[in-house]
Length: 595
Image 1 (spheres, rainbow, N blue to C red):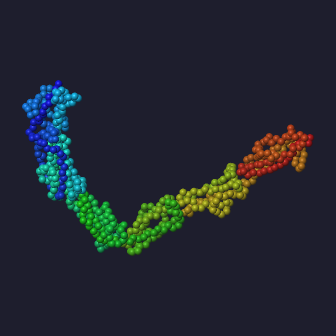
Image 2: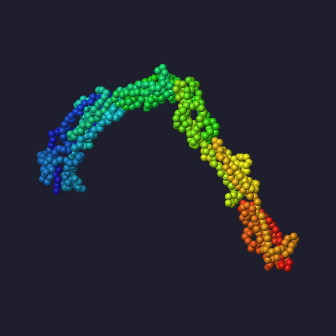
Image 3: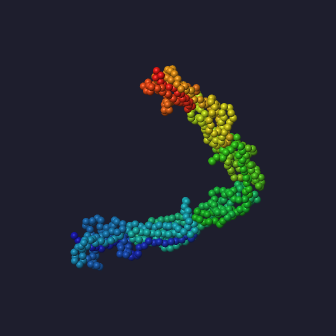
């Protein structure tokens, strides 16, 4: 089936326009304020067709009627539709932007045959049913937004209109006049104050934007400022360090943003309350100040000259008595006292004040003590002279150490505890351990059996018998521990050794007794205090062997050396529970019965 190429006509009461579509961009400057006016009525913009650069644009809501001709410039015939009778004649475009009317396949004019490869024949038609959009930009002036929008001097306004299809035809605005003006350049406002700008744009097929508006205030006037002296003043311009300046401001439009001030040639500061002078040196000074409103209108700088009398007393503190400087704190005791003094080179000292741990402010009259509570404490102190110059607050923080150290005794080895008595010997080392968590240990002392105290170092007690050890520790702020005692018994005596044979001797030889060859030797040892721990023996130079019973030593020679007598040398070592040791050696012979 062939498709016939046709021409489309759009019937409306309009003239075709062949004008280049473009976005309108311009600038206007407000050099004075515009008088606010009522919104002007927007004129009617006729819906139409617009042809530009070979493209045809139609206002999207217009009806379309189709005509065709079999020759260029020939008779035109209306084209109707039976299949879409209810939606053609006229037809409306449903798609914003480009639409197509098409023949299914292109025919080669020379051959009258379908072009190969196949391609459609397309007629473009642009539907535009959307109005342009206009943006307003403010520049060149400071802006401040609160309940209204304020602009300062030098305000520049820019209107930018854009249209997505047929393009912008015109942009209109109204500022204070009550009528529309075609936007193309700059516009001047007449007076400072409230302004209302109305604006819109229309495109080349008659779509018009809804009127927009922007209300704002133009502020061209600087604020005004004044000062007032608050506090001690003499002869209108001599002030004390406690005196302050109160700076007040006023602005009739955008409001005061900040007030800046400075003294002499110092850097400017922003006012945030009353302006103090206590950090300035004594002498002549000048206060400069000015205000800036919220759109940067700046006041001419104001000035006020004055004399500041600022010679305050100098306060010193003395800590008297027990004290020790640690890594973090100065440690004191409950006996330590505090003295405050002050000097002044002008009017003389009026009063000295102090507070302890943030408590009540008190007049100083005599030495005082820190609270008798262990821990950190602080004294805050200052003074005034006779013209009310107040010295800067000073602080002295200390750590009150009112606790004595704690000391314990450690007995080394050897030691033996039986029932309620600790036994040691002359080699047992005695160690005193002391701790103080505040100012630290200064001195450890001890004494033995009622003797005087001496400085501690590790010690032993040589004398046999019961002994009493006394000891104590002093910390670095002279807190002294209550004297402690410990009792100990020194046992330096080794066990006594005994030996017996199971039978009487049968003779002597070379001064030593002779025993029959079936004899047994028994060993024993006794200790007066701690008891015997071990008995060891060796025979004829052999290794020491732990003695357990008489059966351990069997010296029978019944089956050996029957022809002659045999001499034995026995070494016995006995040790008590403290390691005190005794040793004995004895000799004897073992022979046959007939010897």
